[in-house]
Length: 159
Image (cartoon, rainbow, N blue to C red; front, side):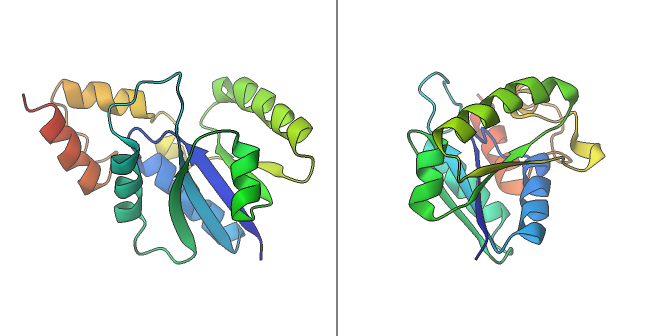
């Protein structure tokens, strides 16, 4: 079985993330979407909330699991039996950082490949920071995030 993980903070998950999940699912037998616990970031939503948002958003997808992890991505990939790590690239500006991370992961785990996938071009400008900022300003985010995320952001910023 060809299994990959798709790690990220997903704060919150967007339609761009979901598009990458769909693309990965079409290429591999199993995809584990894994919410990273990053001590250098202060997320808007808890790990549990982010996991639940993704689970709700991909509940109709076969062969997709959702979990969370704390630590090295390559260690988590090994723990779940994945042979690859999916990384989404929206623009050239993403490439340099992702390339460095892929080389470091290769150094740490030669047997785990990094696979770069691009979302559909209609999502290339999307990121979670833009979504949070738009929601803060009460902008319409319905074209960018699943309904569960839209409701959670509306509740979070209704005060």
